[in-house]
Image 1 (cartoon, helix red, strand yellow):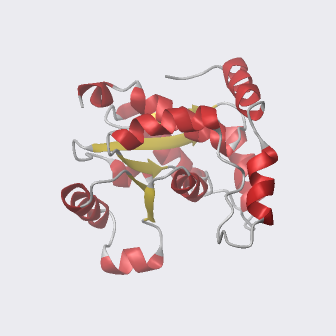
Image 2: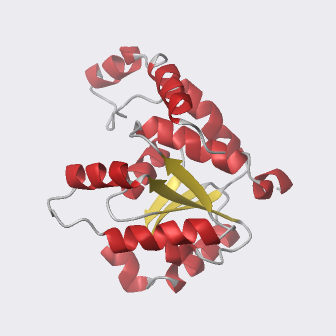
Length: 207
């Protein structure tokens, strides 16, 4: 379900208004907690995430270079998902893409009783996903993507060819859920919207 810019801004405001730094301060002062989650988990986002955790959902997250796939994957881990990054060199040595993405997902599905998110790299790797997979393509508007890429990458050359490939996939492949981003948004807003996209999909409703 696509949101208008005003709806995204309203969601951002709602999520930001529920941030409670009490738990962050409490964690940071402790001498016995090895890992402090930052930013703190958000109750509104967690309510959405729980619906996927309960169903042991397996999610692929794809999109152009620098779109935020790894950031999303890490944030899903904060909220309780197991995660992998298919762009990691060790992953690619053992399970070359795109076949490795499907084979590892099959192993997760057969052997693990938990929810999983895999940063799935290029959109074309997510074509023809297994029935149990929720493939999500993150696709900002062109100007939003250019600003985001320049902010997170040292290279001044923006990979617009790959952006165009993913844009074409989003327009022609109905198996892939597309998260359109008309404006910049916080990571928790993105996680909320990904969950909402999946929950409202026909595949999720059938499970």
